[in-house]
Image (cartoon, rainbow, N blue to C red; front, side, top):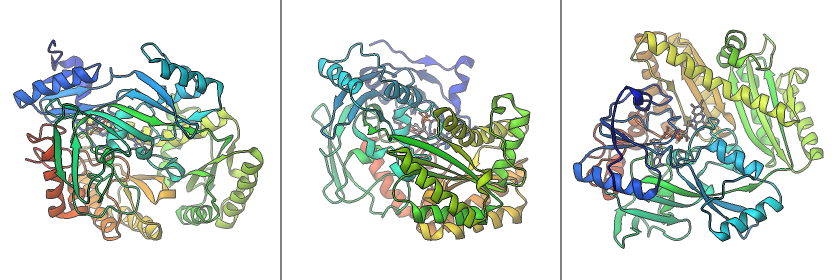
Amino acid sequence: MNDIRKPMSEEYAQYLRDESQKTGTASLIAFPKTTEETAALLALCNQERLPVTVQGARTGIAAGCVPAGGLILNLSRMNRVLGCRRLESGSFAFRVQAGVILSEFAGAVESKRFSISGWDEDSVDACRMLMKGGDFFFSPDPTERSATLGGMAACNASGARSYKYGSVRPYIVALRAVLADGRPLSLRRGACFAQGRRLNVSLDDGGCIEATLPSYRMPDTKNTSGYYASPDMDAIDLLIGSDGTLAVITELEVTLLPQPGCIWGMLAFLPGREEALDYVLRLRAMDEGALASIEYFDAGALEILRRQRTGNAVFASLPEFSESAGAAVYTELHCEEAKEALALLGRAGEALEAAGGREEETLVARTRSDLLALQFFRHAIPESVNLLIAQRKKECAVITKLSTDMAVPDRHLAHMMEYYHDALDREGLQSAVWGHIGDNHLHINILPRNAAEYDKGRALYTLWAKEVCRLSGAVSAEHAVGKLKVDYLEIMYGKAHIDEMRALKKAFDPLCLLGRGNIFAGRGAM
Ligand SMILES: Cc1cc2nc3c(=O)[nH]c(=O)nc-3n(C[C@H](O)[C@H](O)[C@H](O)COP(=O)(O)OP(=O)(O)OC[C@H]3O[C@@H](n4cnc5c(N)ncnc54)[C@H](O)[C@@H]3O)c2cc1C
């Protein structure tokens, strides 16, 4: 096979960074199109002892795909949907290459239009059944829909709808992957389990990996902090969330859910965060499973949106909202019928009034276009903050995104919100807070204006990580650890458990070539 690696040049400069704005270094880059090409590249790099960093769409915000020397293995050209099958449940599973983009896949599922060239007959038949039958959807939605399915698997991504549907993990039923030395493996959910903490994984060439799982207990919250490890676990769950450090995922099989008959959105504005928290707790108490998301935006986030609406043409279509709004909460209702959604909307309206919000200022989306407008509002906040950080980085090179991604158990939400805001006020830092409050998972975005504020922000991040860990929470709930949260992972699990993770990494990647700098400091697990 030809060596498809190309020397790095200015043409590929964008591949040195992701949405965190951290920039790395690399000597070579390659864009394989198949598992076989990926395997050949990895075998070659292994011979040369060259580090390899896997990339999907580079939408990550923990710098996981930012290279630390060596080869950039960019999977964006592995973007074919390979086949489909009908499940016993009546739903469908799709086999895709890892570089398939979420928005393209979700769009194809919605419109039931697939390029079936190269599919086997069973897949074509299953696709015909899908076209004739009801509607289905792929529920994982990490806001940034240009992410790849492989990247989402590597981060165990979730997002707003995870309140109802969880992260991407349970929707992945099979994986094909390639080890750092080029040997492929195939994992199917339900087919390979650890015995206690001992895990034996068979490889496609008849070989086997023997590893011991770390002994920590994972938090009882949303979590993608370090390796997924639990006694008797399914082996597939170890690769999901492994942040590009154990193997390169080249193909996935993902499942769909039946599309709810009626999806409505509701964006409520409240005077401030105390009222918003009260409203959220009322929403959670009344929910019987029809709320897909409960999302929060604080005064800082709303202020950024107000400025974007008037100052940036891209955001001109954002809905207007009252100057007096000091917080907002977005909920998405997934019901079977409009009657059910209407009743739920009424109860949410009562909860809003009881919490001090004004029902007449609420924006309700009952049509698809209105729903997209409210989802755009939701997406516009991280997008705007990323733009702002990129701009500030031009003035002060050390600045990277300082956005927390921590979740705590239900009972600690109110305490953590106060804890965050007290510290921000005390230090006089600009911030925007938003995120998945339904899951007690907020993104505290510190917006430093200079290096001194950046350092203060980093110190606060450490302080918060300690508090979150004291409360049995997770330092990374959905973005994975990447390179930016390595220190917080050690706060969460301690050195002894990090060493257990190192040993596990070495069983899969003895030369520590894959994803250097992710999860572990420096040269990985060396
Ligand atoms: C505006 C914005 C909003 C966001 N909101 C959310 C959100 O709500 N929820 C959420 O979960 N995330 C969110 N993200 C983060 C991001 O979209 C996700 O982390 C996404 O899952 C990363 O996918 P990617 O293809 O871009 O991966 P990349 O950024 O390219 O890579 C991410 C990590 O996965 C590894 N990786 C990538 N592909 C593979 C593969 N095939 N095999 C092995 N390892 C691989 C990389 O090495 C790296 O460690 C947001 C990002 C942005 C910019």
